[in-house]
Image 1 (spheres, rainbow, N blue to C red):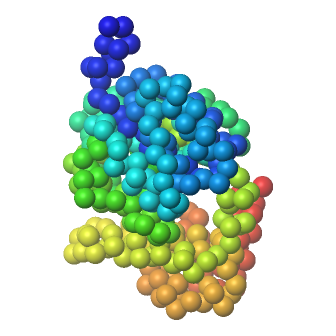
Image 2 (image 1 turned 180 degrees about the vertical axis):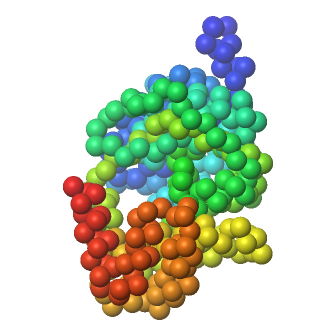
Length: 329
C-alpha cells in the first residue's frame, strides 16, 4: 500500500459535484483544479446535463484517466437537476459544489476540511473571488477564521457578509442534504436551498481565504442577461426563509436586506420601467427599505439603493444600471 493510499484511507472522502452544460472552453481547467487538490481523498462527480458540445466526451476522457472520477450522463434538466443527480451518486462524508466554468485553489478542500475539523463545524466556507484570468494566488496568508451558530450564520448569509448564498465555495457534511434538494427549474436555486443546510447545522466556520474563483464573462453578466419575470422567484425563496424563522424577530433586518438585495439585482438587469413597477417589486421596496435605511449592518450599496428609491423608480433604475456597467468595465 502506497503512502498516498494510506493517507487517503485515514481522511474522510469528499465528493465534488460538477454540473456541466455548454462549457467546453472552461471545463478542463475546472476539472484540473479539482484533481490537483492537496487533499487527495476525493471523488469527482461530473454531471453531463446533455451538453450540446464536446463536454460529454471530455468527461469520459477524464474518467478513463483518473479512477476518482464518476461521470453521469443525463437528460437536460438544468443546474438544480444536475446537482441533485450528482448528490444521488455521491458517497463521501463531505460534499462541495463547483460550477463547471469556475475553478478552485489547490488547497481549497484541505483548508476547509481542517477548519471544519478544528472548529467541529458542519459547514466551512471560503471566499469566492471574481477573476478574469486563471489565478489561484491568495493575497492573505494569515486567514481570519470565524465560527457561528446556525442562526447567526444564516443572518450573516442574508447580509452577504462575510459570505453569501451560493452553494459554491462551501464544504458541507453530506448528511445536511438528507431530505434537501435543489428546486427543479427555479431561479435563485441556491437561495431556496442553502439556508436549509445552515439551519440543520450546529456550527458554521468561515475562513477568509480566496479559495473559489469564478470568471466574469459578458455572456453571463447581469447587464447582458437582462430581466425576466422568472427572476421574481428569488423573492419566493426569501419568503420561504421568512416562514422558516417566523416569530424570530432578530432575523427581521437581515431578511429586509436580502429582499432589497433581490430587488437591486432585478434593477441591475435593466428591466423596462413598466416591468420594474411590478406590484410585488414595489411592495417589497415599500415594506423593507426603511428597515435597511435604519440598519447599520446593511451593505452600503443596498443602503444607497434604498435611499435613492425614495426619489422614484426611474432614478433608482438609472443609478443601479449605471453602477453595474461601471463594475463590469
